[in-house]
Length: 80
Length: 445
Image 1 (cartoon, chains in turn blue, red):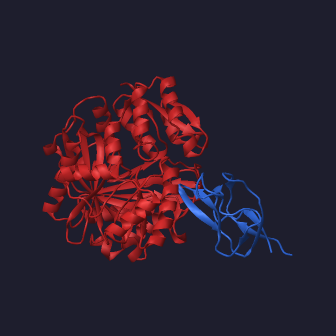
Image 2 (tube, helix red, strand yellow):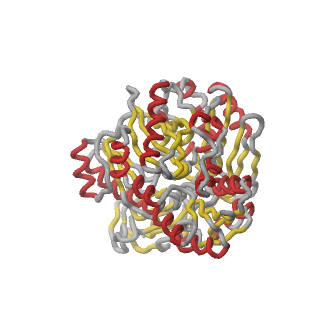
Image 3 (tube, each protein chain N blue to C red):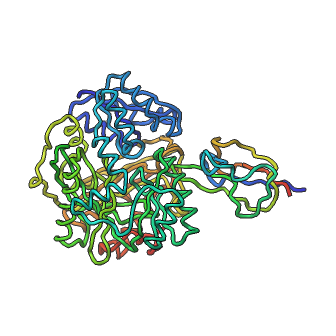
């Protein structure tokens, strides 16, 4: 089975939750469809949604919330 | 008052340091670990690191800022704009620490920061207000209020001016997601996720009045700024005077601004924002209780140094100027240069500036803290420079703007310069006929 990843569209700070008191957008084991928001990247005071491009099941996160990320960096591994 | 702590970064920190220096005042800069090589740090007399890169750890860290003032023996704090500039808790903390706050009283910040109270005060002072209602809102209250005033409605950060965190919703479903997203951005930008809501007026002009108050009921206005050239509620360029504004409307609006400032015993520089609809009626939308990003436009036409006036007022001195002395001359336009790619939906573009050449010559002012080799950090606002041009009339200012914009060389990052050059080729802009939706309608962005 091919491994798929969700990449960061931008450099910045990654967040797994819409705000500090909310649940994460997705957890490991959750099924996602294309367009599903899995996190946010904050850059220059604006927040950009990170969306899944494929369907699959979230296998694991490669970064933690509030980690600095680069554009194109793999954030999430999806299993079929 | 001999030593001022500047609780900000970038070009505005530099702007304040310059005013202090001209008045013979000593300065203390603060910086995050991401700003160790920033120009404001080098130019100030002293500098104190106040924390890690994230704004909440440094430039929004009230304890660290007060501590920096205490340790350096600063007697006053100038907050600039953004960050904690309209945070009454910070103003209060400064006063409680025995520091002079260069700005309006915490009570005035609270009053004007609470949109419902501000609206009521404006109404009482005989200043027209936007149709609808306003007040800090939960999601449920937002939905209920929107039903009352009718869609479309506008959701906005209660804590701050500026365009960040403002969203327009056309129906309850949109409003739900707007409220959540706007609260998130407001929390990140201002440390306060409160929101307010009002009826959205289609195709308005955004014109604001610069005021100065002495804190004892004395207030003057320094005329208006046209701020309608916006993208997603974020101002991109500003000019003064406002083009095609009839003289009676201008006079009525400017007097209303000064009247409101006087009514609340406002101290320091402030901005009273109005929207003007197609029929020329104007409505108060909010008062920004701080120096504004676009204040140089007013300085260029009036010759009055607003930051120095703020410092004089904070020191308890009277204004250096009377209403009748305020005589605007010529035309000024400010272009905001943001580290954003206008060809890619204004995507933020932080990174290293690998080559830098700045324009100059007659009628050109540049407020910036960038330098050759500077690395624009991803943590803060994308504004990296302001180009302000002055001309005897609007045509000369426009020609000068076009000339100066094309002299810039900023390599390594994307900027909004190409956007501004396109605006200066738009017939609607050249005719002075634009409103807050023009950028989208003209497909300029």
